[in-house]
Length: 194
Image (cartoon, rainbow, N blue to C red; front, side, top):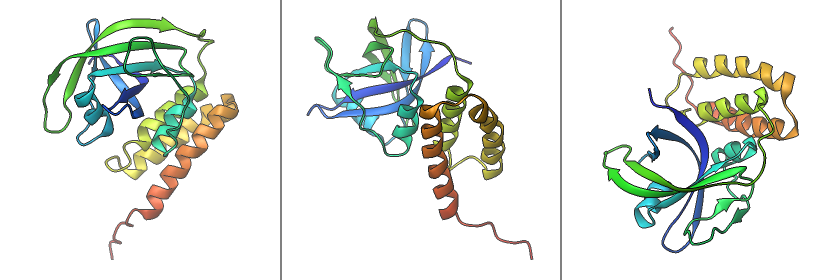
């Protein structure tokens, strides 16, 4: 299995409109692979402007926010690069698409890292941040994971939230839980076995 690094990817279209999305970048030697689903804004942007920024953040509200319709996060322009970075990024990598491996469901954009820049120190791990990230992954798969699995995972992850969460993690957790609750409220109920 390849290593996957959870980051926030920024892309832009030809008009300069920026899109912010959580992504699991796939390691491929020195390169990174971005594999967006069809259709998606990230896919369209990479086809128009073959550059992206991998934003390494520890503010899990950005992951949760992107999945719950909160995509307005402050950006900073980069020198001689067509896509901005997140202001909250501890570090970022500037990526250039080298080639595309087409696929009817998830094309793979193989990207070279042109430059890496560090902005702020990483101050350690937090179990609540990891729990929010795992909940974000679950929330992004509500349409194809069984409800029982999601509920089991939430019960397990809730322990880390209760023991180690600060205000940012609590806010991110609540946004994701609202999304999950709304999804299940709208989901059709299983037929009874009468």
